[in-house]
Image (cartoon, rainbow, N blue to C red):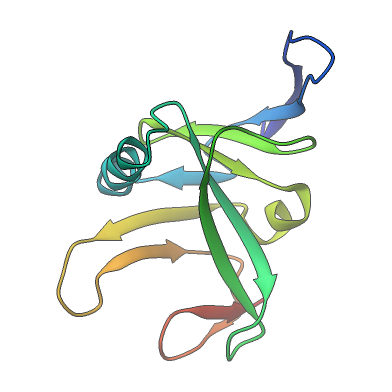
Length: 130
């Protein structure tokens, strides 16, 4: 199952999100280690990595990644690679089946998304079309 309903048991400001699995997005061990390190540096050891798809880039769509304290309403939460990842429902349409990797290199290093839904990608690898 990609996502199942879940509600947090918290007072008035409860956040309603769904729990998904690695069929939505999978994080490699190297990417998980890098994100954990970044969360620690920000003082958010229990934080999440948000992956979103926004308009832009030379191919029309690009990835936006951000570290946050926790999921927001309607998010899908996936635990993979030892970290928690959140994706909004609209972005989930574009990232389903993707893998997030981290390459530590002087040239071409950084986070890399392998997305089976990308019809085309630009030469720099920073944007895609679906």
